[in-house]
Image (tube, rainbow, N blue to C red; front, top):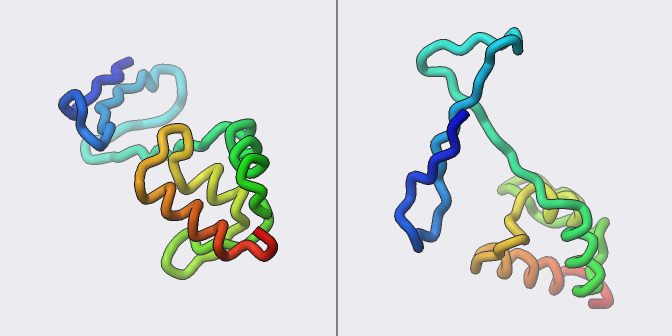
Length: 102
C-alpha cells in the first residue's frame, strides 16, 4: 500500500501515486493496466451547500459537453466542493443563475 503525493507543496493540483495490494482479491494486474478513481463529495456537504445557496437540487445542469444531470448529482460526483477552486465556484454561480426563483 502506497499513497505518495507527486506534486510540489503549494501546487494547484494534487496528483498521487497509489499502490494497492491485490492479494486475495481475484483481480489480475498486468503491466500497462490503469485504475480510474472517481471521488465523491460526502452527501452532508452537498446538502449543506444546497441549503446555504437555496439552489434546486433537481435543477438540470450541464455536467459535460452534452450531458445534463441534476445539480445534486453534479455537486456529489463532478466538482470538488470541499476545497473549491475558481472553476467550481463558477459552476455553482452558473447553476444559481439558471435556477428559477434564486
